[in-house]
Length: 428
Image (cartoon, rainbow, N blue to C red; front, top):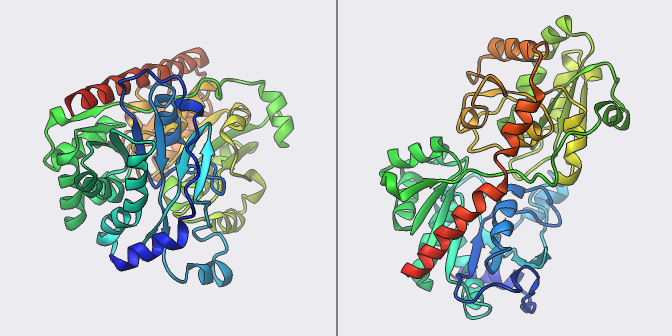
């Protein structure tokens, strides 16, 4: 415990005055929420966990919200940045105000690669002083956490110490965690003690039920889409802006450049695809993340396969600019290893793109008919290549794709969450 207090004291400055902004005008008697998630955008990583912010800042338009987004830390990480990986765990400011909402980034002790069973405990201990202070002012009634491990486990402990109810939203990592005995046990206990467990897909809900959760305890509330950001633009104009041939066939993947997202699985199919479609180009949109940055490896792969002239790495793109990249393409491809509920399918669909993806997690729940895309077995490169080739020749009903995406806006999701939080507050 002494180590955790020391880590926190090194980070925490005097507390800024709470901001009003999105909290102004909230009706009296409604619960105040504290959102707890390690995965959340910050000034250094502006696209990191945008899906959490999109969901909870919309809730924050109706209820008071404050965010605690801890960042991993251990002694000596600065040496790694200096001599090995300059982008490793970049320093994040302790406090930010985003859209009028206070967002705190306290450090927590996290030893890379070892003793991962301690992450939940250290996360709870390192954030406890800040949580107690926020409990006093501005105050909160419910802790809403995202990802069951280690975040959910940490909030399970914090809830005991602070005597506040909490909810957990299940996202893409639970399947991997459920195969580790101790993490599985801790995650199951955290879910069982939560007032409500939300899941972004039914596939994740079934994993939770398989871990012993009551079916009535876990409710599916998928992510939605921000229709202010995503819609079709003129394809020719977008291609000119991005330097792509106007008459080419273009496919796109949007995501962080790590192994899980599967950029390399698409690139390895390009030599065969280019034989059938010599004008094919592949847009790789995204940057590194705490999970890693495979840019150099992907560039080398494209070079070694002789397809580098057809692969375009754009770097990370702000959400409000992504529509121009989607609109420049003919097809969205995501050969991912696992997902909970991938919003990129809806983003692409809202710009008129069909999708080819892998049958993992909740992918088939989003790409749920042949009218909007194709879903293939993960790891079957031949099936992936055939599906891409087919999708590039099919005459798609773009209007049907647009309507499928638009029917899943945030406006359909947020009232359900508001009702759930209000019910928990009244019961508590």
